[in-house]
Image (cartoon, rainbow, N blue to C red; front, side):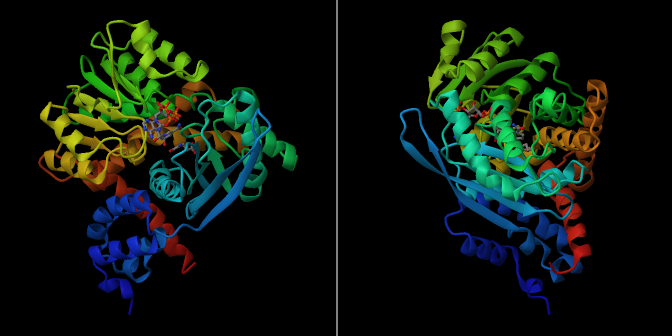
Length: 451
Ligand code: NDP
Ligand code: 2IT
C-alpha cells in the first residue's frame, strides 16, 4: 500500500521540515504549494501512489563547491557556489544565478523549486534549477567581478550544458556577469552553445530578454485588472527594488498610463508624489547599474521626493503594488496595511516576496494577487525563446518575440483561471498557478516510472 495515502498535510509538512533543518525559505515555498496541491490530489490516486509531491520536494541534485579568487589587493578570498538542479521532467534544468551575501542552500532550493512550477507554466520545455554564490558584488571592482565569475564558471561548467542545464541572471547577475561567465565557459570547452541565456545581442542573446520580467509582471497585472473591467490608466503604483525587474516594471506602468510612487533598495525607499516618470526611471537605471549608486541619492536629483531609511514602501497608499526586490520583503502586517489602504491588486515581480502570512491576508481579502511564479515568468519565457533561437542558429525579430511572449503570458493567465476560479468573481491565482504548474510536471513524472 502506498504510504502517502495516509499522510495528511500536517504530516507531510512535518516530514519536509525534518528533512530540511534550518532551510526556512525552502520549507516556506513547499508549504505555499502543498496547501493547494493537497486539495487537488485528494481524489487522484496515481499522484499519491507514485508519491509525486514527495519526489518533487527532493531536488534531483544539489552541487556545492568552493570558489577562490584574488582581490585587487592580492588577498585570497573564498566563497561558496551552488547549482541546485531541481527537476528536469519536462526539459533541461533552467533558472538564474544569484550573487548576494544572503545566498545559501535554502534560498537556492526554494528558488529552484519555484522555478520548476514557473517554467512549466510558460508552456515551454524547461525544467527547474537555480544557482549562485554568497559573493557580494557591492563595492567590488569590475576586474574583481570578472575574476570571480571566471572562477565560479571554472567549476560550474562541468555541471551545465545547452541540453543539460542552462543558467541565466538573477539578483547581482546581469549582462556583464553573463558575459564573463560565457567567455570562461567557451574558453574551457571550446564550444559556442546556448549554455547561458541573457547573453549580449552580438553573441547569441535575444531581443527583449532584459525588459520582459518587469514588463511581463505588468502585463499580468493588466490581465488581472481586466477581469474586473479595469485598466492601469490613472492608477498609483508602489514598487520595491530598483534593479532590472523593478525599473522595467516601473517603465511599463508609466507606458500604460499609471503613476509610480516609490522604488527602493536594501537601504530604504524613495517616495516621489509627483510620479517617477521615464526620465527619472532612466536616471535610476544609470545610477544603480553604471554608477552603482544608492537609491537614497534620488532625492538629491529630484528634490520633490523623500527617502525613508531601513523601511519597505508598503505603507504608501496605492491602487496596485509590485514587490520586485527579494524574498520575504512583504510581510503579513504590510499586506494588511496595503489592503486597508485600498490596494486592489498585487503582482509579484520578485520570487516569493510575500511571506505566507501575507499570502493568506491577500487571499482572505480576495484582492487580485499574482504569485511570482505566474507574474514574473516573462523573463524565463524569453530565455526559453533565446534557447530556441540558439538551437536554430538564428535570431527572431522584436515583433515576433513580442507576439510569442504576449501569447505565453496570456496562456499563463488562462491556466490560472482554469484552476483558480473560485466562483463569485474571485480567482485564486496562487492556487491556479500551483495546480497548473504541478499537473504538467507531475504527469511527465508519472510517464517515467519510479526514477
Ligand atoms: P537586481 O540585482 O537587478 O536588483 C535587485 C534589487 O533588489 C536591488 O534594488 C536590490 O537593492 C534589491 N534587493 C536585493 N536583495 C535585497 C534585500 N535582501 N533586501 C532589500 N532589497 C534587496 O535583481 P533583479 O531585478 O534581477 O531581481 C529582483 C527579483 O526578481 C529577485 O527576486 C529575482 O529572483 C526576481 N526575478 C528576476 C528575474 C530576472 O530575469 N532578472 C526573472 C524573474 C524573477 P540593493 O541594490 O541595495 O542590493
Ligand atoms: O527567477 C527567474 O525566473 C530568473 N531569474 C530568470 C531565469 C532564466 O533562466 O531566465
